[in-house]
Image (tube, rainbow, N blue to C red; front, top):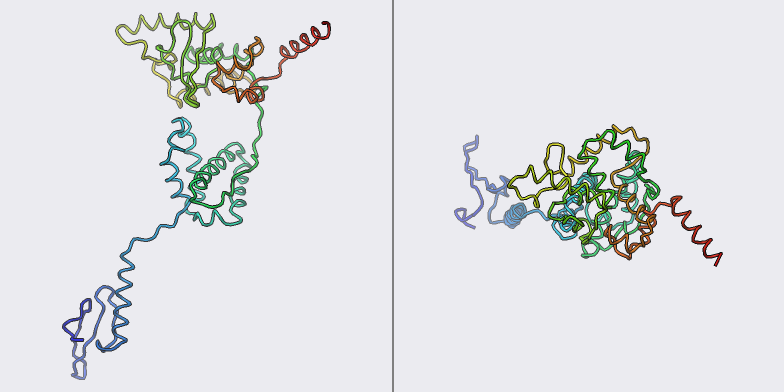
Length: 358
């Protein structure tokens, strides 16, 4: 091979101490020295090997699918995008924890025996301090893995079933009249109003703070629930109509030329529409001031409203028409919300006595 036609080879000629001339060959891209004879088989093999190494280094690295890359794929799909914005906001904290713990875990390892134990131990470690939050993180991981299993990204779903460590039954946790009395004695008007509207409508916090005056016609409230998409028609109690009508009259006087229909019914003390975080913060502060000893949440007002409807003699379908649940979930309503109260017990015995007397 002529020395003048050695592409990719740097030729260095030097004079030795003895006065003789020497020629050295180096691979340009790597700087590696090649055998002395450019016509030898050893030279050719060494040159070809180094050239292949350079080409391999230029090729983009093959990305090994991991739980981290799966999360990105999941969050780009309708399974995630179709969730309510408030749900995504909460669940992002769980996803961040999952990615921190398992982001670099190859999906091949997810399919191996033993992965389930790894995930459950991770949950159990967190559950020592925060069992409910630990279950929430494992539940989101299970849903991400189900997404992968359904799309045949993985062949085995290690968390298709699991038992929760956090167990709670809030069916008997109700806001009693004395609780509302304490809240009304210390809370600001916007907080009192939010609790009042929640009790008289049985709706979720997010739907309540999103209510606009255009959704109230003086007799009833119409809304589409953000969590389920259910459309509900809520005839207002006389007490609720009185409060809303008085509030609308006051707001109309202040709104002047503004379009009242587009304005929020529930606002902060500053007159601005609530955000979820602002309402959470204000509610927590207001609840602490009440010094109520029971572990009551704003969401428990929804269960209280369901119980009141039942005590008033409403059927399950009637309750569902207000709360937005489907008839298929009637049993769950009874189990989760309908507390076994003295009123219902007395009603049941009265009916039994009438039956026995007939």
